[in-house]
Amino acid sequence: MGTAKAALSIRALLVGDRLNTSDVESRDLISTTPVAFHLDAGVVVLFRYGVVVMIGLGPDEQTKVLTALKPRVVGEIARYEEEFTRVELCDDADETVQPGGPICLKEFSNDRLLVVADALAKSTVLAHDERRVSAVFDVIEPFAQELATHGRTPRRRTEILKLIGNALLVQQRVSGRVAVAEKPDVLWEKPELERLYARLEDEYELKERVDALERKLTVIAETANALTDIIDTRRALRLELAIVLLIVFEIAIAIYQIVAAKH
Image (cartoon, rainbow, N blue to C red):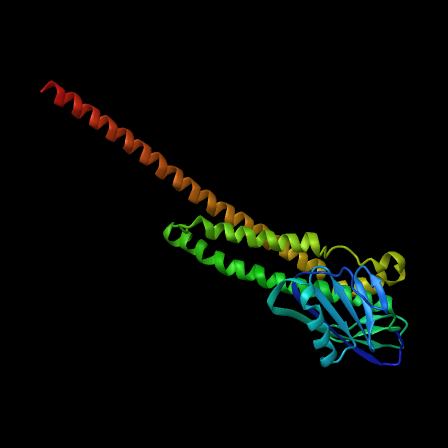
């Protein structure tokens, strides 16, 4: 891509659980993993884990891209998670990432833009997962409070199983499909861009956020398992009590029949 522009806007959107990137037709294909191509004066990057990154596109162009991609979205989310940033050309030989500000690049090369797109896409997914995990904590807190205050647990085991399910879904996305800890494929061919990616990784705190998510997921899983164990134990006690009462009832009937037979 040329360097005529002094700055480019970048918008990343998480549109669904997955994005079908197979058979994407474009005469200006830049990359296949992830799928990236030129569109007018900008670049579109598609990530299979549901993120679209649009670089240097205006509002109308962005709307057209999202409309065209709708049939390829699997598990579309009601509220798109999105992040914005801007890249600028800099005279400084050392590429920098300003805290909360623009990303300074030597040139708007395809490889550099792919590295920026990768970091922004991962940050967008993490923001969505952080929101989901916080929602799970909001559900768990009343359960824990009820247990601490009254010694009672939720009666319906299904609610706890849903919490475990939500935790597993987030864990699968972070460690599986998204693979936040893995470096973008472009670095294998362009190792000189590792410093740029490391700075982006630090700016968006990718490693720290993944570690924090993992810790929260562990807490959720342990809490949910503890609650289900308590519920199962109480159910087992109730079952044992019912069996004992049934035995006592049968013994009482047997004694009554013996006594009645003697008379």
